[in-house]
Length: 383
Image 1 (spheres, one colour):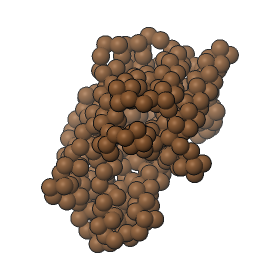
Image 2 (tube, rainbow, N blue to C red):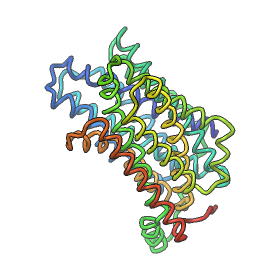
Image 3 (spheres, rainbow, N blue to C red):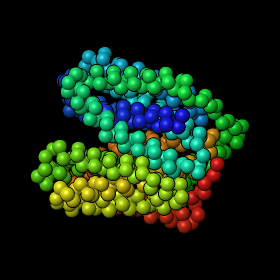
Image 4 (cartoon, rainbow, N blue to C red):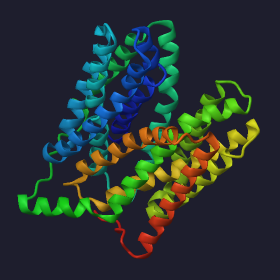
């Protein structure tokens, strides 16, 4: 059952990453303006944030099983709607529905997995989930780019839709129909207020935001950096693949046991320092070998950070409020990736300056986490 939950997480992120190479060309094929093309890409993320929040609230009220099942089926339906697009504005409508429905899946899946496994293995389980996300990040864009070139973008979306539909049908039989953990209204309100201001939870959210902030900066600036050094346009994609492979190696190897042994604030700080150092190195790297080794190091830092912030969230929440927490957690993911590219673009920063700025922000977050731990503001493990 645990593996099946990870497989559902893989499919959800596969759907996300498979869109990346094909949405802009699809919008252009309908004659969309540059603004509408950009909006077609961004409206998915905006709707996804709403879906994350709705998923978290409903997961706590109705149980994550129902929300996960509904999210899989609705997302499959939204993917089939790409066949009906006739112009730029119908594309925007479908993108909004796709983002909203897809936002239901991931918080519910992680809530289901966290509530079904003990806290003693929460770090290692987060690492395994991260490995599946890394696989999706590599397989999704490659699949959609190759398949769309031979067929069409709506056909690619339909294949993913059939996969999610089949997964939803399987989930109905495989997953256990858990019930929500309800408390009396007064106790529930008090618990939600305490969770909302928990330092551990706020640190987890900040980690999620800046993790994806750095991803947004890299996605925007790394190809420009590679081209500026005289390398081909394909180099940026290959560098991102190296980052993904390095992260998967850490997630999957026995070293992932460290996430259940060491306090998550320490592995989080370590990951942030490695990522920051890699970003500083990217700003000065001149050779292709230096770029590849730096991105491999960044992937290792990423692999230390993701399970750590997941563990911080689990340690700071009870099962009765974990759905909303994961909803906010993945909303921070969506906001972070948009903010990373948008803020550096709005400031008119070069690739080198963007890497340095992002590295400084990551170091500041690492220091903040360590200070919070020193002052005993962070929670210990709990059941």
